[in-house]
Image 1 (cartoon, one colour):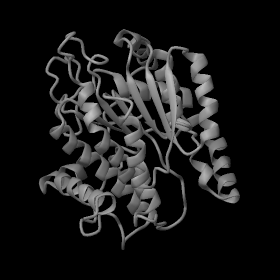
Image 2 (cartoon, one colour; image 1 turned 180 degrees about the horizontal axis):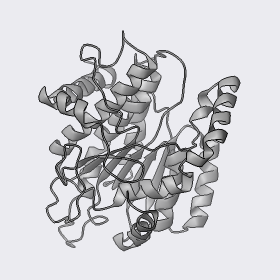
Image 3 (cartoon, helix red, strand yellow; image 1 turned 120 degrees about the vertical axis):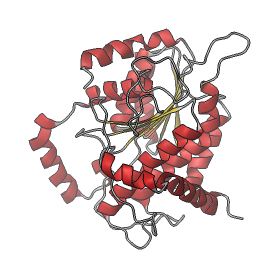
Length: 339
């Protein structure tokens, strides 16, 4: 466990990164995404932040508060139905027209639902898309800008924000399990339990593949623990009321939202979670495969190593990560680039 004092000391040092850090928060208008964005704006110098979400009124309120928190920061809202991959593409194009580098892609978008399979007009389950395909589409599209952030300016010899280039997906690292390889998108075998296992495991495996293919960027899959967020907004009044009651009874066991924001900012910026190509990080954390500084990390809410190692070891034996990432790219092609 990383102590909260150490987390706050690190976060306070982010001003040393200098100006012009660029961060994209997908799901940044509520919950952990909003809390992490607040901490990022507070602790950085003249950073540029993009909040991606659906609620424009809520975003406007947050942006006003963030501008008061740090008048030098530039905060923008980009509206997006993140369950729709073509909408994700439009958002990425908007950001890419303004930015040649992105230091941090931070993703928390999701819904809490008790529905069964709920297909979008693109043929994907909405929950599955938000938790996996949409996040991977943001990552895939923005990889050129993330890679650019890792480079050193040839004229000045200075990196863009200490060469910080990181992706964080907050889902449920540690809950990995076996996959139905004949139905990765769960078209015919959908259940909420299967959806959770597939999205979590596919995220962890894909990040290992991406860390190997893009060694200048680091990839973090984080488990948030129990944090009261805005996920209940998609429920009906009875289900929402029941869950609010559970929240109240379980309050002593919850991680406060502000602390969660601090800890996720640490996960998003600490040099311990270094990219694979970094060779001089003495305190590099163990990667998802057990190798220090591997570039892909599975984290518990407190910054410690996490991940369900046994099923991941079994899946690696068959190069399942490569199969999962190929399936992901094929899904993108079929929806976004049909021939």
